[in-house]
Length: 391
Image: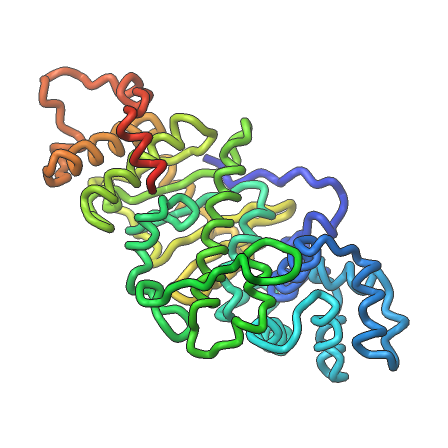
């Protein structure tokens, strides 16, 4: 597979920020603008409404802020927010976007203050909103390649598998497994659950707490829904490269793992998802964490998700060599049809209480050449579908 082609743009940078245009953009500023634009549109607000909110927040000296200033903020151009921070007015801009003091305000303020210290082509995002910004950056990409070493990416997990995968993962101050999420239906204001939780004063808890857990869960739901929408489109724009090791690890136990593998097989069969499994028999240096290759109009951004942060690198110019490994690995991996056969074989073995071995995946007990296309496209049973619906 070739690196992602240049995406089609409608010509409106406000609706399609371009992290590859480094003459105008910096990666950190682009991420801030992406998050702020989402907060605005999620509330149903226009740029002019933001402009009208400023006088109430700061009557002196802010009436002259133009619509183009807000537009530049949301596309990552210029240094409007940095200049506002230097003059003590950043809080007024954030207020216009519905972000007041608290965890969200501290998150975005810290990002703005870090901008002068970061290279334009790199950004390390460890703020509380980092996982939502990964989701937003992924949604903006025209082409996406997810490369997962040992665990299935969050966008492709069924709920039970996700709960098992993050059972011991630390939150800001607690862990997923021992923090009951808050009820987001009680939060006032417009917007999706994730944005309302992010803006909520109740999330201002340095120790994590129920609202933080609810925020992360809402972001996870959004990520999965957005990825399912992407692969439902007829034109393929998403590829996933999994190591065969994923089939052998029983995350959540045999039953949960089997249901997760069948879910992946169904996605490949029923959608435009290009999923390929890389055999362990073909040695390959795997990335240590989930890595996403996000294709935009003039370049590709590499996003590496760690346990509590994400690193971004723009693969432009001499950085394009970073794109060689995943696409070479795709060529060496099993085809989507072969990969579906492997998923079903592993799931069936787990359901029957057997260990997933090399012979289980690649052997032919009947001594015949397996019909990989027939087995790959077999319909899921009623029991399979019921299990998938239960998550």
